[in-house]
Length: 145
Image (tube, rainbow, N blue to C red; front, side, top):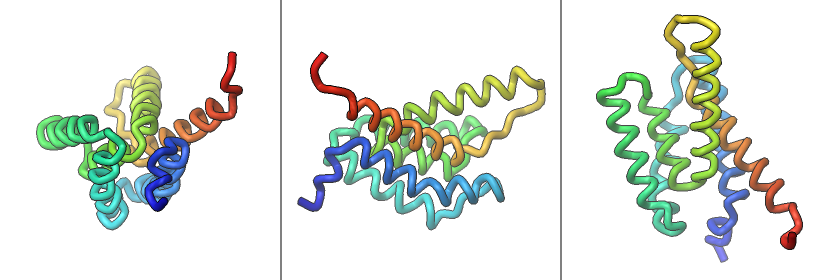
């Protein structure tokens, strides 16, 4: 079946990781991510979320990202589109990203008092890679205890 990949969170996290690699490279080099990299992920997130039951999470992340972009001042449009994409396609990758970026931000703030600017797409990539690895390791454990 064409949609069989939707049932496998490891595969979805791995696909997200591969998609985010060029985003991370571009964000690290230029501090910008092109729409041609982020818009397809954002658009794909909605039908995938509908089919996988992640629609409420995807909508909540969309609203949160919009508010953070519009009034928060710390979230770029590309980061918002990527966050919505991960919420719809690979929620474990989004969770791992939040943890990784929070730890990176905390570490950077503890080292000096200057404003911290972290390339978000790099964090999203690392989150997707971490989630894919952890889920693959958990799937390789024996089913019985």
